[in-house]
Image (cartoon, rainbow, N blue to C red; front, side, top):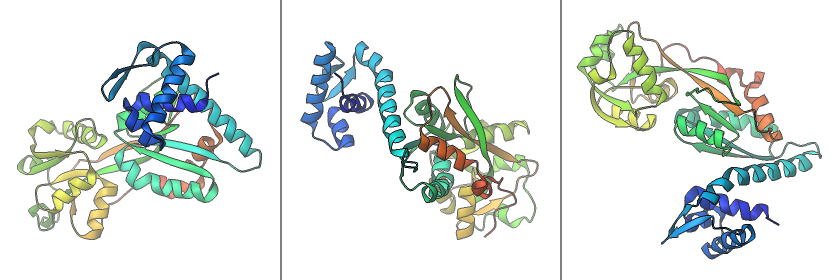
Amino acid sequence: MLSPRELQVFLASAETENFSEAARRLNVSQPAISMQIKSLEEKLGMSLFERTGRQVTLTEAGHALVPMARDVIQQTIRLEEAMASLHGEVVGRLRIGCSTAAGKYVLPKLLAGLHDKHPKVTLVCDVTTRYNALEKLRAGEVQVAMTSLREPHKGIEYRPFLTDRIVLIAPPGHPWTQRGEPIKPTDLLEEKFILREEGSGTREALKEGLAWHDLSVDELDVLMTLGNSEAIRGAVAEGLGVAFVSWMAACEGVGAGTVVSVDVADMDLRRTLWMARDTDRPATRAQAAFWEHAFSPDTEVLRRLPEGPCKA
């Protein structure tokens, strides 16, 4: 009979395609991983991996086993949590996938409140791209996703959590900060820019905002592209250029005096952060508790639309 542990080892190996990395993830020895995989293959009567040096790749049978193994593991987790919860407490492991801004500025406060209510819930946050957060949700690797990307998919329920503003920042002393009035959208073509990567929520919001003024990102003088709002804010603080970043990242810098926010006339950039869950998969008690907490009156301040300019 197959054991959940063997399936857990298999999934770690399938996700990393490296037995040594799987061993590090599970905190066991590499030979122990190899023995578990060999035992599983013998029970099933087929190879699950092709071995090439230190790297391994899934066979056709291995690919077929992945979703079924995930379902078994999830069912086992739900069983353990349900039995433990009979004592009246919410327990379990909750894995959340989120984009970078949500992972830094939103989830820590949200999860702190959840921990106060349910201290026996173990929380794991996978900070990744907004696209990967949804992919992990669809694959069952996370139970909840928080992302600015909303793609229709069978079983995926989206609920708006908050709407973030995207604002322009410049280094202190920049001419735009001395005007006393908003700059024009066409003024953006005169300065060097530091942009978020292609496909990010910030960049998509900027594309839409520029399009309203018959402008495009391709017309901007782009000095560099970075995949992190904090890195961009740091580059702006060093005087390398100007940038559009999340209101949350901007205000942290404005408060520290390292950057200054600049208003752009008739350009109001916003993006919605969505909370998503897969309704085709039964929710664990930990997942249900998180969802309830996320949209409870306790989090109303966190969910409130950021308004007004950034101020020191």
